[in-house]
Length: 537
Image (cartoon, rainbow, N blue to C red; front, side, top):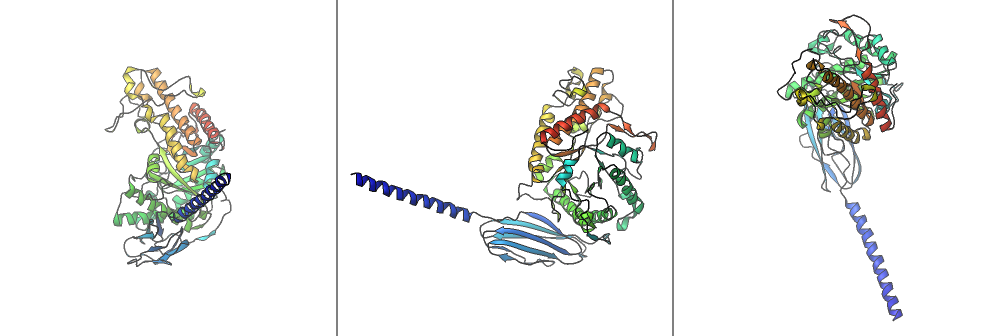
């Protein structure tokens, strides 16, 4: 009996080993057969003058691309087996067909996976301004976009100045001076964004040629910042036409390329302290218009890189659809390889930032302003709100425990909780996870509340609380930005530039020290939470 039990036990052991081996083999078999195709859905651009792009991917099954009717685009390889693949896409030279052209490559693998690769070639409309390209120069350009983001403490905009119509003083602000940069530096701000307009500064609109005097003035302003060791970002402060289609879109895209070839060439000598930003607050709101926006961004990247020198390594800033943080999450999530449109490609890795603006809620941040009237600026889409914030203030900003009024006359002017601190906490954590944690730093190029105290004349307690609410908003949004890998740039406020119709009436000065001190507290709390960054001194 013992012998029989022993034999039975041995048989069970053998059977158990056999079953275990089957499980291992089965697991290996399932692993081997799992579909694998590492190519993502992408949109890429072949320069109008011709050129090549590379597709590099791995497949564990045979694959093929149908090229019937392609004509202007040639592929080095149209099919292959499992393993690594490299395909060269070559576009015909000098597209003067009268319109841009595009093709969709459908990459099919026998494991059942499919990818769509959209390839554009722009049309030649304006002359090329990349007439003096030079060899790549990495001197002074060693930092990645993430490293630059970590070095930036806090940013400020030279608003309503170089983007003003007609001239730098078109909206009443004085010309930018070295003293203004010196003031910012002395108060701990180490980055500026300079919005710039070009359409009023052309010497030949038919060829999109920018006045050299305007480019020289931009160089001078950038140099002011570089003199102080500050990071300077210049942009084209307009929507190139994200809702345009057909020939109109082709022309707008060609103009965008022409502008950036000239800007990049003129600014090529500056080191990594200068960054370029493609465009501003577009009308892109859906996949179609976002695809158009990404096309403009791709032309911007291609134009800048093509000029050579330090521009090959310069950090470039592309903007989310409508400059919206929510649209960045919904339309540009890089974790979803199946989502179209996709972010543009760049020959230089780790040199891209994604920009959004933060004017949430818009009834508090956009409605209102310094009009000195008691009449609210209500709109068809909402009423002006005066009070934001339901958490305890910073110690430098009074003793408020929240910023909502209890005055029955103004209860409807309180922001709702879903648009206040809780929303900021949630949305900044989301973009950190989707972008900053994936090596794409976030650039909050504008944020600010509106002033509402003029609506509260005769109600001193409410007026003071509304002003404190603005300070709390500016400081708290900066804190949550820095806590989640986002660089905050205040649109306006804190620093005053006195002028009378564009004529300076005195030097720039700190006009709101309470808010400045509050922001320093907020930024440094955010840096402590994030675990790295340059403190706001």
